[in-house]
Image (cartoon, rainbow, N blue to C red):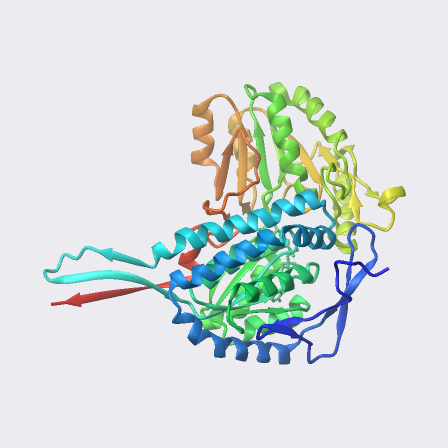
Length: 485
Ligand code: NAD
């Protein structure tokens, strides 16, 4: 049965309208909660890329000459429309991602807040006077557009991800082409329609549908692309950096995490267990900032484990508003998660709960995975280092704080991390010595605010930050200007 809120066919968005692919091919989009086909998506190719970049080139010049204040007015209109359409957008997100409408509504809210903050505060940050040691010289920095950009997003929190990139990119006066994720194609189209209704000129924001290695690759290969903003897996990040290296293209990378959550002996164990459950199982663990390594000091290991498992066993999986987390995005990802757990158990891990797909009764046909907790894992085991991106958490026992810190740092990913302790000296030690982009004391490893820059080091990212004002440094170019009398 065709869904009421999902179209049977999803196209590209070029020049302010839906546009078919020159390939004439399609791929299916499935509902993660039922496994049923929701619709067909056009499968973009190189010819489509040529067409969309030409449209962006035509639109770019006029958009660049609009003042930041006037660009911000259009973004404010877009935020108002996101709010006006919150129920419809949340319904699409819930369906595409296999999560509850409540959680999807929160995502529309987060996307709106990102837009509001940048549209209100951003225009004040396009010009900076600087002192000069030379007499009679006036110096300033002006922020100019970077040009035509490719925005490439992951499937998790797709609307928030699109907002994090699109609002600062558009505020800076760029024309951008969003490569929609193959698992979340329709929310990108709705975002494009909202921008049009908000007054954005045709061609400034386009959407390409299709597969990453096909249309995504063709997009980043085009020399007219001045910058690429990418959030996704390390494997794709590496392809993007290599593909654009010859042109020295400006590239923002936000990649994965293998985030540690440290529980010290003086921690409030109930609070820590709540935060660990929230961090490990948010969006079925399909969050870059999810905690996957829970490192517990020896003295409280058994007690923490007991309280943690009691809470995990109460988690409700499903897409109703009262459920704690929903489906895995695709059958392929579901099978990979199951395989990762099997491999861990085969190499010595003890399975404390979960470990299997949920496919009976209400879960039939869908891609659900039980909340899973492992222990007795060697720090050098594959699962200690691989980002599973599912509802799978491992417990590690540490002799003392130094060992906990060493385990926390023992990852090529360096995105977020949390420590639970009442000892602020210990917390400060963790802040100083845990190498990552985000450290949380007595809180969860995930969660963001619209003005707070987020990002990681090592395999987690290349150092640019979104959202907030620092994002403008990626999407715009500072030009130094001096006036001599
Ligand atoms: P992915 O790398 O498989 O896909 C991301 C996007 O890249 C998709 O749109 C895909 O079509 C595109 N792509 C694939 N190959 C391409 C190519 N050759 N050229 C151009 N584009 C190409 O990632 P995913 O599985 O969708 O997302 C999950 C990953 O994203 C996880 O690793 C997660 O940690 C990470 N993530 C990071 C953050 C962050 O802020 N650090 C936020 C969310 C997700």
